Length: 104
Image (cartoon, rainbow, N blue to C red):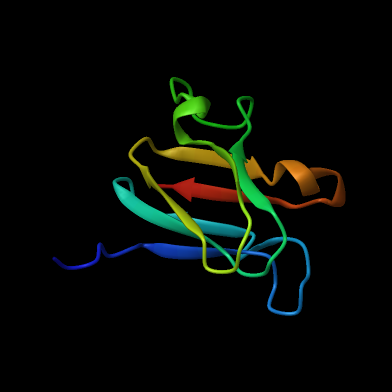
């Protein structure tokens, strides 16, 4: 069984322990899948902002509120609806850990 191909990988946390999503903004085509990977040992999650997703998208269905605690832990999302998706890391939202995905 082969591994799925990802349109992009977004790292949760920088290589030197910085808080953030890397890259912070990315553009993909509709139907492509993005992999979110915890880069460092901080607990991170990926929560989509209900006021910053295309109309009709269920944020509960695409958010990953459970924490990714260890390096290399990952979650994936397939994005079918074109538009802009804003998301953040719940424990680090106050520190500005937020990102944006543009689906064409």
